Amino acid sequence: MFDTALVGGHLVDPAQGLDGRFDVCITGGRVAAILAHGQPVEAREVVDVSGRLVVPGMVDTHAHVFRHVTGRFGLDADLCGVQSGVTTLIDQGGPSCITMPAFRANVVATSRSRVFTYLSAYLVGGLEGHYYPSLYRPDCIDVEATVKSALANADLVRGFKAHAEVGGAARWGNEVMQRCTEIGRGANLPLYIHFGQLWPMPDAQEAAGREPVDADDILAQVVPMLRAGDILAHPFTRHPGGFVNREGRVHPVVREALEMGMKIDVGHGSHFSFNMARIALDAGIVPHTLGADMHGYNTPVPPPPGTPEQHSDQDHMFFGKQRFSLASAMTSMLALGLPLEHVVRMVTVNAVEIFGLPSELGTLRPGNPADVSVLHDEAGRFPLTDNEQTTVVGNRLLSPDFCLVAGTRHQATSAILPKVERLAA
Image: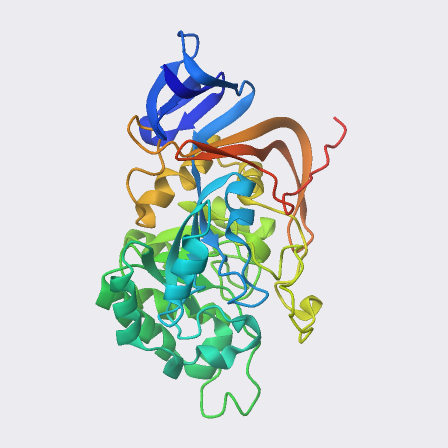
């Protein structure tokens, strides 16, 4: 007699090589058995998930959930997590060595979602830095303090967030990235590096005394500074300084990075471009993992109470009040031609292995925590639009139904989940 059984669904668990109709049986918050559908199952609660996709609890590798502390930028963790069908979140650069205790107490300890972090390499963390590039200059990095914080919070900190982009390089050269690499080596943890322009180019006074910087030179300058296991983010960015150069070709150094053992994560969000994705995929550049990259500038949520209207979101390069989720980012990957097994792998076992999460996550192997994501899987014709306003029509739509975290059920009720229309056949 099991506590719960999810019966009749299409289970895809790449770590176990499972792809078919299986029943997931749960006892005491852990997976008790995976049975071929049709075998007798006795459980206190039997949940019929016929016609739905069942996968190990999904991992969002690029979240921004240091709510309130990061101003408008940080979202509620459970809004992006369990309420969006996602069991595990990795916050990218919200907390720093200064604010890590607050992140532990006010985000990790209070969320129903599992939450980890890639600690900011900068003292300010993610404090609305999109508007204040000066907060990310070299003397705002404390290598020793950041390493110490990571080691003191090793249960939560899995690496470090850094930025390699033309606005910063035009101001400070490669000094910021040099300090970030010192942090990664000091803690023996990977870097997660943002590529694609983030800050406006400096004015003449800010750039005084420095040689002009070409966005197409950023990758070639930064990759030799990195090491195996470091993660290159935003391969499909629409902003200058990404994987695709101004001539519309993938930089050769990307292949060199892969040969060196680096990994690629799709931080979807406002950066994502179907056109850039097509170029990269056609060149054989297939990302390993997938993050939604939802935050307060690109998601239709109201600002925290008491937030003054200091900035116009419409003037920000990441503005775009689209509703999206990790499941809709998966739908985009399917529309680009990636097979379902690989897309599921991106948000499960690959995410666990590459981002250094506990090995019992990412697969429904018996004995592991019963972290499960259940998705609606619809066939049809669905228009998918990126922030460039490019629309691609996909033939498959994934949307979250519910998830389980250690066997506890959470419905996908997030207000930011997209509503995609179905086109006539």
